Length: 508
View 1 (tube, rainbow, N blue to C red):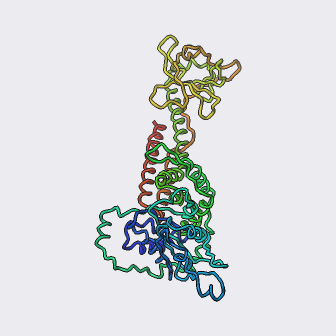
View 2 (cartoon, rainbow, N blue to C red):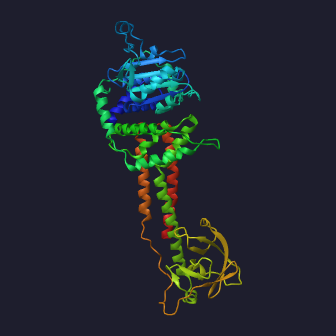
View 3 (spheres, rainbow, N blue to C red):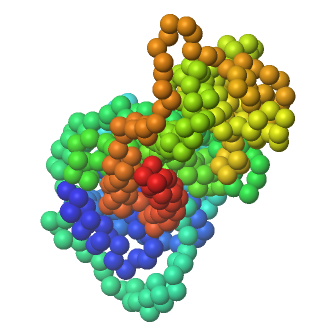
């Protein structure tokens, strides 16, 4: 399937430049039974996209029309049959050659159509039905492509029509000089024909539609959709301080899941993965300036679990490095110092408990306490903070400023004598071993948490590479998308490189 779709798209793009995204997403919309709107100035090949989409389907009929405020329903849906009106007193339209009999429809300047046309189009687009007289016609319509050089005007009742266009794209003129030159020099008379073997028959279209319905959307993808849905309530607009609540209707989300299933089917898979979500930013923006920020939101959601895993690993690694260094420093403490503090009760191999504090669970690092300057001398700089893993515990330790201080910590000045620690000059007793307690020797071995950080970080790097590969192979992701993803992944890999360097500190 994927190879056939790629071959079909290659043929449809022959002789037309920098419209790969428009054509591929239009084909996606067609196979999903959805619609698309192309926004852009005149002369950027919007109508050409619709004509090429007709070529994707075997023996397909098409209908094109340029709307104006004078357009009538007769011009779109067919004139009233005078003979039927005379003979049977029935008001029906002769639809042959008009929109109701077309597989692919292109309506230019869509917002200039009058209410009578637009109201009928709502049912045509959403339900593929057309009421002709007292009967309903099931339409063969596979794709409706609308075009305009402007957004729908506010306050004119166009919101429902705008919502029907599931994919929204901005069409631009040719950007690359080489493609522009080829367009200028190429003959316009060359007729593009697509091999019938690549074209999609009506039978295939119906069969594929049934298979698309069977594509599974797992909970991981639904969870990602929930994140996106919450995030677009506050979309940051680049270059401003503005945040917008971008509204996406429930019906629209339903149609987006149909697009996802179709994309998965076209990639020869039977289950959606989170990376399939990236192209849906083309379905979520209401105004063009929201598009890039919504794309960034989706990229962030795709890698959110990876970032959370990396963040947790970095925090745990930082703690293990600190404990490793504390244990290593303990080995360097003189035997005289160890003997001096042999009567102190050691908790969890690393801490002495302080008595009489406002928080009864206040501890100081044993290694730090053992090396504090004697009371009366210049104090050692330290920090006091709540332990991140247990907020009811207060920890005090020396701090030289070479690393970032724990979140929420406050600086303190530390000195000691044989039985007390002085915190900003206030004397606090250090708990001693009670009579009858077994003697606890200060820790001397380097603590080993048992975690293989090297293996974990490589597993994380591999998962990023797999996601990057999946994104690169997605038919519906363009160069601009890839550049944004490349920049985002580069920042992740930079973090991973720093983490690898920190892992080496465990072996120092």
